[in-house]
Structure formats: C-alpha cells, structure tokens
Length: 508
View (tube, rainbow, N blue to C red):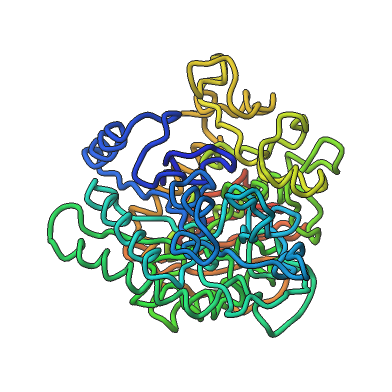
C-alpha cells in the first residue's frame, strides 16, 4: 500500500493534496509511478494507493479559486464556506474543534481586504474540507478514480472514509472527540457526532464501487480492483455498513486495534466483529498498527488499562520494551490466525517500537502545534524503518539523516540483523505468513472457544488443516494437549507449556 505521493506542500505528510493527478517531486514523477505499478505486477504484487477525499490542500487550484471568488460563488461552494456568527461575523459558524486541536474554522480575508467568511477544516487549516453535497465534487473524484485505475493501480485505501458528509445545518457538538474518529473520550451518547459517519456517505461509495466493478468486469489480469475504508466508526454494526456488497471490499477493524490486552475483551471484539460482518456477507479485516497510532510493540508495553496515548514523549512514562515486544508478537500471532484479511504496518515485522524519546523540536505532526504542545502526535510511529544497521540512515536512503530521526534501538532491529536469524521477529512474521498462505487460514472458518479466564482458545478450520490456537495472556503457563504439533510460536515454549504473553498455532 502506498501512502499519499501526490503533489503536496507536505503540511501533513502528504495528506494535504494540491494535485491528485501528479506525483510530488519529493517522490519522483508520474512516469515513476507507472513504472512502479508495472514492476509490482511483474512480481505478482498489487498496489493500493491512498486516496484523500475529505479535504484538499489550501494550495489546490480549487481552493485558490475559492479565495479569489466572492461569497456564494460556485468556486466557494466546492468547500464548506460559511458566514460567521455575531453582528460582524467574527465568531465561527459553530463550535466544532479540529481533530488536531483548536477550532475547526478559519476566517479568510476577502479579495477587497475585508474580514470575510469562515471555512471548515476538520484537520489542519491547510486542509479545507470539501463539500460532498455538490455534484461537481463527486464528479471530480470519480474522474480521479478512473485516472489511477487507468494507470493500473489495484485499488484505494480511502482516508477518513467516514467524514465526507456532514449533518445538515452543521449543528454544535459539545462532547469531546476522539482524535481520529467517531468515538468519544469516556462519554456516552446515542447521537453520532455531526461530522462523522453520516448516512449520506454511503451513496458516494456505492458510486465508487460501480466504477471499480466496471474495471473488474474487463476480465483482464488487472481485475479484482478493491477499496479499503479507513473508517473510525463505532459500534461495529455501523462499521459493517461500509463493507456491504455495494460499497467497500474491506474496512480496517479499529475496534480490534483499540482493544486492551485482556482475554475476555479480545474474545468479545473478535466475536462481535464476525457477527457484524457476517450480517452483511463481508470478511473482517484485522489490523494492530498504522501510521496514526502508537505502534503495538510500544502500546502493549504500557499499563494494560491505560487509554491509548496520542504519541509518547521523553518526559512521559516509557513503555516496557521487552514486555511490549513479547505481547506484540503474541498479538500478531493471534491476529494472523484469524480468518479474513490482515494488514501489516511497515516495520512491525521487525518489532519496531515508537520513537518515544524524539526531541520535540523535530516533530512535524500538526497535532503538536495545534494542541499547544499537549499532544505529541503521530511522528513516533512514522519514523523511517531500518534496513541495514551499518549504513547511514540505517539504509533507508542515500542521505545521512532521515526525515524523522531514528532511535538508537532501531539499529539492532534492522532487517539485515534479523534476516535468517531463528527466533527474530522478522523470521516469525515470515513463518506465520507462509503457514497462513499454505494452509489457507485466511479463508478458514473460526470456532472461538466460549470460555473465561486469561487464555484465548480458538480453532481455524482452514482449507488444508484444522489449526488450533492458544494465546496465553495470563501469568501462569498453559499446557498444550498431548500430541500437539507446533506450527508457530510467538516465543520460546517450556516443553509443551505456553508461557505468559505467548501465542501458539498447532495441530493435534
């Protein structure tokens, strides 16, 4: 999967797009993208590109035209421009806050120099929200889809898929928002936030699915074009609506990612996820880390019941690195035993932690500044991965420095230090993916044991074998049954005993 490589001022790591049909010079040229896709196909790989439809850059030609045009003009209608409140319009149209911190509205200066309207930006002021009620916006993105499909890409990961449509009237919202989605911080309400998960968004994705289907009907080798939703939506029953037959093929299971290291909570989220997705005839798509959250090798080294932090700094309580890695290996072993799709974030196959001691002066996430330096943000999980321990930049590129600094711990975790080393995290991932593919575990059926206690037990009735799984989240070792043939273990076993924070696949 390729993160945004479109032309961009890079105010938010490329999620502020100024031209959806161009490659930013940082990464090359459009011809390079074509060559990459062609070479990937030669190697039997598929390329899914990141599409950012909720907002553009403020340097996009559409927004520049909107600033130059008058209130009420067609150019401004493409975005969420509104008059301010108060006799002089000096107050924002509503009380919405940006997910990066601060208010979600910025006032513009009109072409004549007078204070003017306000525009909505659920993220940074350099990321103005588009007006998805406007047919011209929908037509433009349908054209963008076709542009990249014609170039040969195999699908799209859709950013903030739950955010395109806003509730009519843009009513105030007084509850505190989770940084990345529709959930709330410790509050309960039956009402959905007016900026997230509105029913009208599904009409957009139905039209996109029809476009992808038209490409899949050609019968050539470039079939099976897909869409995957980044939709931070709760409860799982509403999240499942995004993967109905007429919409997305997959949606990241963020409820699973957010679940604490408790056996009963993991059993419940697995059970609920299958029930919700089975109701719409869709597979479940599992994930444990991505570019927006603390990596699970660090997250699972924090106290179990602590809310997931939005970044970790040097002055914050530090994760237990050894415990975090052991739990992360066990968590991935559990995840990859589950039928359905699975996404692996770059570097987790090396056991990479977050950079939790990054100097504040090098932070680039808009969250850091917008929150008044109260939220560290996502830079810690976005550090370039280490390839070669003894090369400048740990082999990531030709330069001495990477765009975010790598912690010293990355040197020992570099790919060349782990390749071929029995027991390394890289070799564990390679083994799991090999067995999962050979046995057809992704297409299997799951029997999750109805039990309590600190052990998750389940059976994947895969195409080629009946694989049993034990994940021990407790403190006491757990015995495997007599005759168990171990296929995969996330850590060393004590004979036939599974230690704490260890997961095993076996046949009997």
